[in-house]
Each structure stands twice: as structure tokens, then as C-alpha cells.
Amino acid sequence: MFSLLLLAAAAPLQAAPATPATPADPVEADWRAVPDDELLVMTLASGKQVVIRLAAAFAPAHVGNIRALARARWWDGTSVYRVQENWVTQWGDATEKKPLPAGITDRPAAEFEIAAFQPAVRMAKADSYSTASGITADGWPVATNGRQAWLTHCYGMVGVARDALPSTGSGAELFTPIGQSARRLDRNYTVVGRIVEGMGYLSGLPRSDTPMGFYATAAERLPITSVRLASDLPASERPHFQYRSADNPRFAAAVAKRETPDAPTVSLDGAAVCDVLPAVRRTPR
Amino acid sequence: MFSLLLLAAAAPLQAAPATPATPADPVEADWRAVPDDELLVMTLASGKQVVIRLAAAFAPAHVGNIRALARARWWDGTSVYRVQENWVTQWGDATEKKPLPAGITDRPAAEFEIAAFQPAVRMAKADSYSTASGITADGWPVATNGRQAWLTHCYGMVGVARDALPSTGSGAELFTPIGQSARRLDRNYTVVGRIVEGMGYLSGLPRSDTPMGFYATAAERLPITSVRLASDLPASERPHFQYRSADNPRFAAAVAKRETPDAPTVSLDGAAVCDVLPAVRRTPR
Image (tube, rainbow over all chains, first blue to last red; front, top):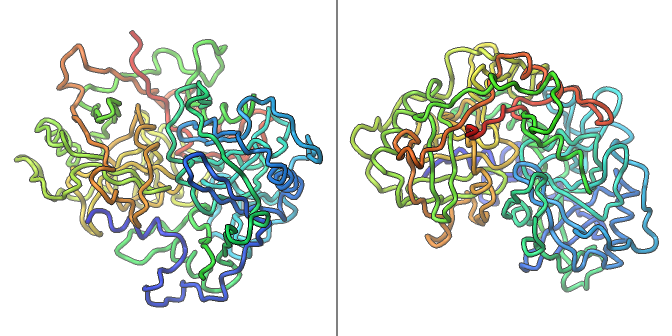
């Protein structure tokens, strides 16, 4: 079997049930419910679903818009219309002409930054983009330069697309980074969530050859069947998710193990905040 | 038009012809030829081609094997057999049974590290994985911890798959990182090259649902039609490439501009080495 080590490095920070308990394994109480109105379920024409956890506390204006858009069924019939190699997948209204529903704040104030840098676990090292970074108690990646603080753009986070600075988007057009340099977007876009299931259905799409990655023809676009808050779905269809909390010694030990792995893995004595995003899972029945 | 800024951030470090010259634009002499025997051309059953620049000077044993494998046409009829979300795409012999041709060093010494850290341009900041990093004169990303030096695993670099440490692979099974945490592989795998054209044909493949991302069925695999050194192709089919060299003030200025972009982009005062890989292009006719 090739590359066993690759598995260890890629696994989310979560123990498989059969794994013997270590100090870095979560206990049941570490798993906490994601509120149903902080889960957005996007169903693609392929039948596949993408589930987004909304960062309601960090980007309230944009998340408010997103909830209103979902309740107005605004995204139904829109599409995934941009897939730029090593950069982003973006979705919403490709025509840029669909009117926004009433109740949407067309130009909310930017939420590029957050009020304070308050991680439960801090990364051991500074990185290229910040002087300190870490994971909040409720599982969000944050960073600071000592003056401002912000949610970081990691692979799979969800950001608000917009026109040129200093504008901010409404939340109707969203993107997720699908490449390596996501952090370059920090403090320039509003982060509204994280894809917690189905990311591969957005990252594994054919790349566009156009300079900015917009599909050149309507036929290339992947239609979006519906986008709903989990709380607005019938109980029988409503998914429930839990995140692994970070304010406990198990998670701190898991991060430390990522930063300094056991031999024979050659240790780099460091890891980036985007390497240690806490696991999110469907609530066990 | 959405997200104009995304374009600026994603563009390779290369000026479009219509752009007015700035101190960060390359001049014609900055472009240098990639030798034809350092270019590997992989043709997929889809008819698409992936072109890999080989790091011949940094991993001579493994690149020697790769040249021998290409000349023996060993990869013809093999496949892309693993696509693990946010991790790697891997190719070679999915059966693990195909004999290696004569002349292959079955277990070459690991080339996880290189002799010295000698970048032409250094990144302004240390990062999570190294105390210093930069780009060599001939365009390769390198890093150091003050003791060892190595080629970094960036998105789109090509590494040698292997069994568990401390083994090293022959070079017959290769992978490229398709996610964000590529740098976690540094010093644990041998880097043999960088994909310089067609990366999207490997990154945009359907993800496997198996735990390590190996396609569960042969039908899911993408067959490889052929893999050839450019120097072994007929002159009429032989591609020629140039890399942007880094040992000049234009490239240094381009990196500095990435690290501290002009307003209105909010500057993070930093960028990672994998954010500034020099452009590689087909040699203009």
C-alpha cells in the first residue's frame, strides 16, 4: 500500500472509533451541536449536497442576508459558475441580473475583521500572514497581526464575493478557496462559513480555461437545485451536525501532535492553523 | 464583474503583454529555457496533457529512475488511481504488481533534503514549517530550518509516493498535492518536479470516497496513455518551455509586491513561498 503516511497527515483531528484512546482523542462531551439555523444545505443538480456551517457570530450582517436569501429561495435555479484552478469555486447568479429579495441589506458594512483574537488553542509559530493564529473554542480559525483580528481563509471556508475594494458583497455570490493560497484573501473578503460536508463536489469540478475561471458557456455551469437553512427543512430531511470543541486538553494535545508528530515522521516543528481545523461530523444517531 | 481582486491575487508572477512595464515585470532575458530532458509529458486517456518540469539537480537518483521509466514506456497503460480530497492526486501502477524495468534503482537513497539553502530571493518572514524560505535562481521553492534544506511541497509540485518511513519510493508512483496543506509533506517525501501545464486535469478529478482516496473500482481510474521525456518526442511534437528566473531585480520586486500589495488591497505584509512560484510558459514562437 502506497503512502500510508499521507493518510495520517490528511486525517481530520478526530479519532476513528477503533483507535485506542490517546490524550489527543476527543471524548463525547467535546462534540457540540451546530444550531440548525447555522447550517446551510445546498443541493446541486447532480443530486449531491454541500453543507456549510455559518459563522453567525463573526459575520452577522452577511449571515443575516444569507438566511434571508435562503428563505426567499433566491439561489434555487442559480449555478456554480466559476472554477478557477488553484484559486476558487464560486456560485450564485451568473447573470448578475437577478434582483435581490426584500429585506436584504444590499451593501452591508464589511466584516473582514472580527472584534478580538480569542483562540482556545494557539499555534506554536507565527506564519507568513499573521503574528499569531489559533482555533476558537467553537472551532473557527482566527489570526491577528497584533492590531486587527480576523477569521482566516482556509481551503473550504466560504467567503463573500464582491467587486473591487473597498466594496463588500451582499452574500448572494459566495466562493470557497480550492487551492493553496487561500490565506492571501484574509482581511480582503468577509468569511461567512466553512464547508463541513461535500467540499469535494465543488473542488472536483472541471476548471475553466478563461482568465478568471468563469465558465465561458451556460452549459458548463452546474445548476443549484436549492439552498436551505437546515432549520427550514422538514424534520425528516434535516441534517444535524456537531463540531469538535477546542477548549479542552484533548484538542490542544491533537494540535501539538500535528505540530510535532511522532517519529518516524520527520517533524517540521510546526503546522499552520489551516492544517488543524477541528473535525465536524453528522450527529450520531 | 465579481471579485476583480481575486484575479490579481491569483495571477502568476508574470505580466500580461498589454500591461505597462513596472519594475516587477520580467524582461525577455529573464525567461530561460527548460532543457527538453527535464520535461515530462504525460498524456491522459482524455487526450489532455500534463507537463512536469523535473528537478534534476535536486533529486538526481529519482529523476534518473523517472527518465528510465519514461524511456521504457513503463507508465503507458497505467492510471491515475487516487484522488483524495484536499490532499493528493496519485498515479502509476494501481495493481502494485507491474515489474520495474531493468536499470531502475529499486530503493534509491531518500532525497528528502537538498545540499544547501541558496535562494535568489528570500521571503520576508519565516513560516509555520521553516525558519526561512525562498526561490532559487532557476525557479524552485526551497526552505530551511537552519540545519537542513529542502525543496518545498507546494500545490502542483510532484512527489514520490512510498511506503511508511523510512522508505523512499522508486519514482514509479508519483503524486501531486491538490489541497492546502502540502507543506506538511516537506522532508518526508522526495520532490522530483513541478507541474507546469495541465494541473487542472489532475486537480479537477472526482474525489474518491474511500478513506485514503484510492478509487474503489478500476472503472473510476483515469488511464494514462503515455509518459515521455520531451527530448524523446519527435521534433514536431516536442514542447518547449521557459521558466522565469529569480536572480534579477524584477522578480525580487514582484515578490515584494506580493508580500506588500498596493492599496486598496489590504496588506498582510507577508506571503508564503508557495504563493510566489515563478511563472513557466511555452516558449514563444
